[in-house]
Image (cartoon, rainbow, N blue to C red; front, side, top):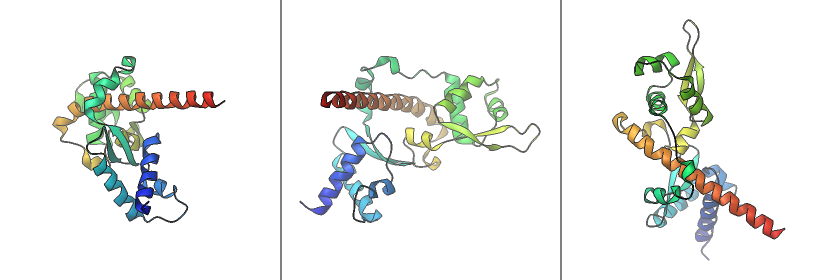
Length: 204
């Protein structure tokens, strides 16, 4: 077997079975011998092409690379667990969009942009999701917290950096679709974990 084919197979298996994105550094740890970063990136590019006509996309996000199901399969996957469908209010979506595009921002900034008082639950939900966090303190009276998005936000929405955010007019529409995609990924992960547990029990 060609050495590059074997290396690519190992990388493919690692990415398919990982519960988180894998960086080039992570993938280098798969091998006892030193594999150049450029070689790993080349093999990843080959995998992207090979999977182009299949059911998954191999994408790069802030923390590394991961496979995710193509958009046309979202509806079918959601049927497996309809209770996990995302339930985000319009306010939460608006707050996340404001933070993503205007960061770092304070609660007062968000209220000024939206023109209404901010429900603390909107911030709490986004922090619990690990999509936003306090990134600093504004040196003004009261020293309010500054909020910004996290690497988890970039990973979950498929961005390598904030520079990849779409035009603001399109963001909320894409955001709603990506929330569904995020929930679908969680469902797939739960299914895999359950399968792993069942296999372990059978072996015992």
